Amino acid sequence: MNPREAFRIFFRYQLENGEGITELGLNKEDIEKFLCGVEDDMLFHSTLDGFLKEYIEDFGENYGISIPLED
Image 1 (cartoon, helix red, strand yellow):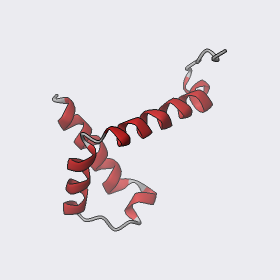
Image 2 (cartoon, rainbow, N blue to C red):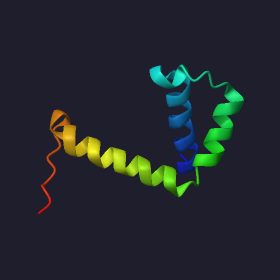
Image 3 (cartoon, rainbow, N blue to C red):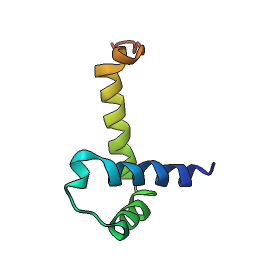
Image 4 (tube, rainbow, N blue to C red):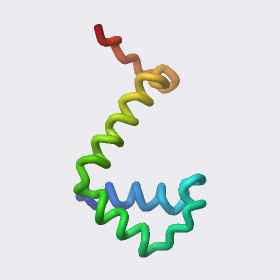
Protein backbone atom coordinates (compact mmCIF):
# COMPACT_ATOMS: atom_id res chain seq x y z
CA MET A 1 0.00 0.00 0.00
CA ASN A 2 1.15 3.52 -0.78
CA PRO A 3 2.36 5.22 2.46
CA ARG A 4 0.32 8.38 1.72
CA GLU A 5 -2.81 6.30 1.22
CA ALA A 6 -2.14 4.42 4.48
CA PHE A 7 -1.61 7.75 6.30
CA ARG A 8 -4.91 9.12 4.99
CA ILE A 9 -6.87 5.94 5.78
CA PHE A 10 -5.54 5.81 9.34
CA PHE A 11 -6.11 9.47 10.13
CA ARG A 12 -9.48 9.56 8.36
CA TYR A 13 -10.59 6.70 10.60
CA GLN A 14 -9.28 8.51 13.68
CA LEU A 15 -11.00 11.77 12.74
CA GLU A 16 -14.31 10.08 11.94
CA ASN A 17 -14.35 7.78 14.96
CA GLY A 18 -12.16 9.33 17.65
CA GLU A 19 -14.35 10.08 20.65
CA GLY A 20 -12.98 13.54 21.44
CA ILE A 21 -12.47 14.50 17.81
CA THR A 22 -16.03 13.67 16.75
CA GLU A 23 -17.13 16.42 19.13
CA LEU A 24 -15.48 18.89 16.73
CA GLY A 25 -18.24 18.23 14.22
CA LEU A 26 -15.90 17.83 11.26
CA ASN A 27 -17.67 16.86 8.06
CA LYS A 28 -16.06 14.71 5.35
CA GLU A 29 -14.91 17.81 3.43
CA ASP A 30 -13.25 19.25 6.55
CA ILE A 31 -11.48 15.95 7.18
CA GLU A 32 -10.16 15.79 3.60
CA LYS A 33 -8.90 19.39 3.83
CA PHE A 34 -7.14 18.55 7.09
CA LEU A 35 -5.58 15.40 5.65
CA CYS A 36 -4.30 17.27 2.58
CA GLY A 37 -2.82 19.93 4.84
CA VAL A 38 -1.09 17.77 7.43
CA GLU A 39 0.19 15.14 5.03
CA ASP A 40 3.31 17.24 4.29
CA ASP A 41 3.25 19.42 7.42
CA MET A 42 6.55 18.80 9.20
CA LEU A 43 5.31 20.50 12.39
CA PHE A 44 2.40 18.02 12.54
CA HIS A 45 4.75 15.07 12.02
CA SER A 46 7.26 16.39 14.54
CA THR A 47 4.52 16.83 17.14
CA LEU A 48 3.14 13.37 16.39
CA ASP A 49 6.63 11.85 16.66
CA GLY A 50 7.14 13.58 20.01
CA PHE A 51 3.79 12.32 21.29
CA LEU A 52 4.51 8.74 20.21
CA LYS A 53 8.00 8.80 21.73
CA GLU A 54 6.70 10.14 25.04
CA TYR A 55 3.77 7.69 25.07
CA ILE A 56 6.05 4.72 24.41
CA GLU A 57 8.48 5.90 27.08
CA ASP A 58 5.63 6.26 29.61
CA PHE A 59 3.50 3.24 28.71
CA GLY A 60 5.63 0.97 26.52
CA GLU A 61 5.95 -1.61 29.30
CA ASN A 62 2.17 -2.14 29.05
CA TYR A 63 2.84 -3.48 25.53
CA GLY A 64 6.02 -5.40 26.30
CA ILE A 65 8.33 -2.63 25.05
CA SER A 66 11.37 -1.78 27.13
CA ILE A 67 13.02 1.55 26.31
CA PRO A 68 16.54 2.14 27.68
CA LEU A 69 16.74 5.30 29.78
CA GLU A 70 18.82 8.15 28.37
CA ASP A 71 21.83 9.30 30.40
